[in-house]
Image 1 (cartoon, one colour):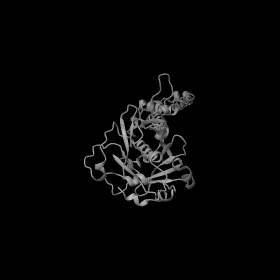
Image 2 (tube, helix red, strand yellow):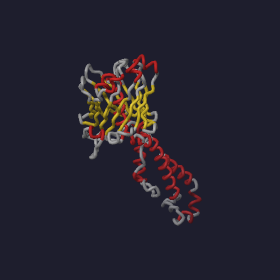
Image 3 (cartoon, one colour):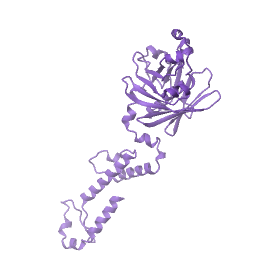
Image 4 (tube, helix red, strand yellow):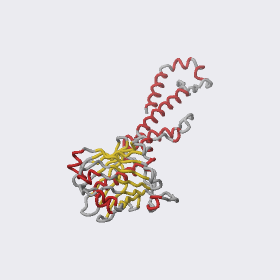
Length: 351
């Protein structure tokens, strides 16, 4: 340790002045000025306050290094003004070394530990809700002329359906949209009701299996990978490099997508709601209900009365909910989007 080497070098320098120290014993006797008395063999005195300052400085450097690697301050230093203990110092050094040497041991990946709490906290106003309704806007150019438009979605809380709580806006190349259709690459911004960006989803071009990534402030939070099957709809959900859920939909006319953990316990559910024959036959304007769990909500009204209660084994974290919302966007693009050009917009009013 650096503080110990500095201490030894100081002691060696003091040893060269040992003769002078013996000739003036009055300098090493008194403890009233913060100096320790010399040893029995006449070794020079070491200032106690200097040792304490050296130790505290080293502790401060180790704490800063631990914070840079995502390790919190040790409990022994919570008081701030009190002298740190040797156990607290050793634990902080050990934690910092473990984070440097074996970051894969952490429950969450390093990038998620280094991601500032404010970046994750800004997901809460939108995603810290029991249920969300995502409705896709009608694309008139797609209906009339088979001209693929950028997708737009409205995010609503079933408890307050009159006021949207967020929006989803796709950004993609107009040529790629017409040529690649549902396989086109795009980036979609998820914003709050005021238009402030909360996070993004990125969907690259795909040929057999699609993938969609959730990103917060340019940092990848998680990803959803579609797993190919002849008729089943299977998706794997990852937070960093750790898979936290899987979706195994039986396919055909089943529109319920359940997120389950490795023990087959329910975590969340995405339902595609029936909006009427006109919407379903002639438009891409689908509606999806994302249920994270009711968390004991009793009073329900408006759209909330149509959303069934969901009992989950645990509540998903905010980053995991962002990945689940990305899954809903991927489902809409993979299975529920079609070519337009029907030329019968008046039938949309049919419910």
